[in-house]
Length: 478
Image (cartoon, rainbow, N blue to C red; front, side):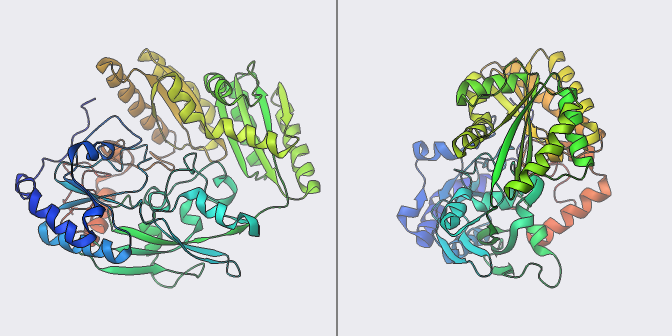
């Protein structure tokens, strides 16, 4: 693929590579620097994988103080910085540039404090999402956001993209579960935003930082909410004769005032792919599948499921399969959580991330299929149906340049469709480079100019993740 452009590298910075590397060694020590070409290869792309750029170097600090030292040095040298967690970004958010230093946070992986009376945890940015829940599981608590990559993705990256997950329908996304951050600014200044309180005084800078994709500063520590585990949880599989009937069922569940923990959708291609991998007992004769999970006491779950099953029958449900044990529940979720990896066994794919109103699900699913078919490609849909967060997986051969261009074009058409249906470009994966040039499709020039003025207030020189989010010919206009 070659449609997405990057900024021209600064030849002067590249010429000073040796001196820059020497300065970084002074900041973090030789063991905290990656500079040999073969060792830099894993850092040249992320989960988006369609584009690759070899960074100038990779620096791996262990503390906020080391991050501040690195940022002061690179600010003085005029070098771009791209923050990186686990590299699971699906929008190209962590892809570097030839004249940029990647600041990797993987060694900042300590849980610093667990405060159960106040239901919070303070962690370094390199802690994995799932590690927080694991740390408090025995005490009856968990951390709610649960992206599919939660075994690998890190809190810093979750904050950068405002990640969600299957259970965001009830518990919200990262911004709803974030209490505070330690942020290192472009010049190395360390600042604390938020803290242990549910709602801090003054401007909502925390809401501004969450979802800013590493363009306002480097998050090194985070304070997050812990939630008491429910008395019980029960996922149920529903098989439908069509995507339309499944989509209508979702709309009616929400319209009835019922808020399950999660409502996940798969169409027939996704069902087949996930069942072949997980052997979870998904109904292979269904055209669409919903995983609906409820929680609470047995009485509460039974009452909620009766209402949901009644609604499903009004939409010609073919299969209703309730999990009967913790093992069966885990298996149901294994299929869903493994969807992206399982699809990767079948074909290369691009995953879109547009969000639409629930009333538009049926239309957008139908037109998505039409768009992809018009390009001669296939699509598998698996997504968070409860909040309309679409994840069409466009299947193609990455080694075929023609198919790659078609897949990218189809993805752009789908995202435009989401916006035109009253939705937005991204629900949880971020803009990155993938959706950068579509920002004009969702926002007016005045709106983009305002966003860029806010960005420039934090980083006037535009050196933090500079090729992302905003169209290149607009950047710096503020």
